[in-house]
Length: 299
Ligand code: KIV
Image (cartoon, rainbow, N blue to C red; front, side, top):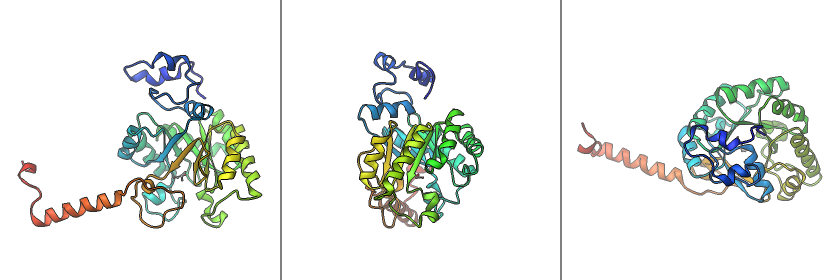
């Protein structure tokens, strides 16, 4: 949590209008003010306290970040899913810290209001809390992100503690953790039956260590309800039912850019692949027919 007594005034340092009096009077208690110049972790925590929900989407470049930010999405995730969704890898494992920094820099250039969180990629934090701090500092210093996300359960509580003590906000990611896909035996729902209690224990340990939010991927709705009730910090779900404070989707899934079988938890709000394909076909047809460029495009 930021220690400044007027965080939103600090947020607005470069913006012309001062925050309204109501926001100044209760900066931590009123959920997510529409006027917040920048979404902060305390806004998400207030959202949970006030029974508000927030939305999170992945973003990997300047324009999508701008579009989602202007659409009011509260949190943008520079996910290591850039490995699959941008770089064309089969899994999230190959992406490097250097590559994550480039994507982070692009997203932070486009996001004026959203809280921007970047994934610590596989291999950048597992060895020690010191390694996690060094990697996170690079994401924040070079990628300019506001927080990091880290996969793993209670075992990583000391790392979360070290990061938060170093001033680095951490979103903990439990349930199905794609970086451990080979350990978990593929894309499988986690936390069923007796495993539910272990997931609650993981969430509590990570929140107690200072995580500002717990993200759950592919867990039964009933387990997510138990986790949400057990921690005071907000939760975010992807394939975790509707009880979490926030929801996240990969943007190419949400907007219908990716082909192939969609996970059950994906809802497609657009068919961008068709829109882009139609635009490309129309352009190609015009060029081949000699109708583009026309006189209006010619110097
Ligand atoms: O990298 C990513 O996109 C993620 C989401 C699936 C939560 O971690």
